[in-house]
Length: 445
Image (cartoon, rainbow, N blue to C red; front, side, top):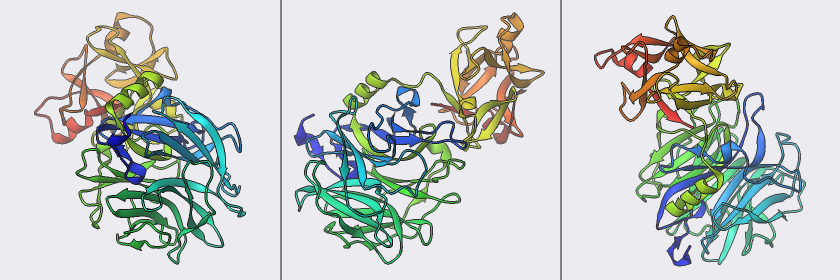
């Protein structure tokens, strides 16, 4: 990539040709069956709906320290290449202090080189949730992370090469404990979003210099759900808006919430409806960076898109189609076993122009209707089973950009949920708005 095309804006560093995004994260699930502390990547064209790469397996895993990571952060450097930083922690032993960060270099995120651990300080404390930004006045990068020097603060070290770093110093200590800073430079303004541990809310601060302890908080506190942390500030590739993400941090709750604003310098964040975005499956505390179309294509070519899908409800967007005790259901995400919501959408068993839903974790079983109720049953290869398990995908009855599924052998009936159970019922364009929403789903990885 030509370095002249690169415009660095902190954690959303992007080139002028950026048309897509990449998301770095680790994974956890409610009972930790899906926990993996390697570097995961997902891609998106719109920055809202994400497709995990490498079948949601890690693309690289640390080989030193704890041999695991949390909180991966991707920065596009001044030369157009990337650096990846991450917390050195394998699991959830948050009492385990560590003075190091994991670091990799990468040209375009299709391979990772130069793996090392960089010592950030000599304190008996943690080194969590790194973020990094270009400080033009210094001619160096700042690496900001959470630590404790008697109080929870944000520390900073400066570097030119992400190998040798300056002595650590306190970067943000506003008089109350803070966690999870994200720094973004936009024009001549430095924005720092963080969690106030006293209130449990996310706030935004800003500075004209980016110097240590020069920030002034300018937003009201933000929270969605029961708890939130890990603010992630992203400038849209189109340059006409911003998004702020927050992680629920509990694997038993919704993993991410999001806000949008047309003016990052204002105090006007609007919560996004969960039907407007779908984070990567099982993703936790990550980072997002803009990429070009060529970089998007290279990532997909190298790591591959999912060979499975999920079905997200239109009117209950925190719920996904899953099987449980062989019944088709609509349940809240996240769930266990997490594979119960994963399907291979294959050519229809009765008509290849239609579709059938093959279970990922029970591949001999398919969704089918029986007495109009949806079940997960083994394929006995009878004509009746093939017909019951075949649907025609059509424009969503409640939203034409989503999908509805018409029964092959009962063509006036559609797949829908009722009291969170799946069935097929007669529906049409004249059905009630609620019924049409019950039969509308987003196909997403």
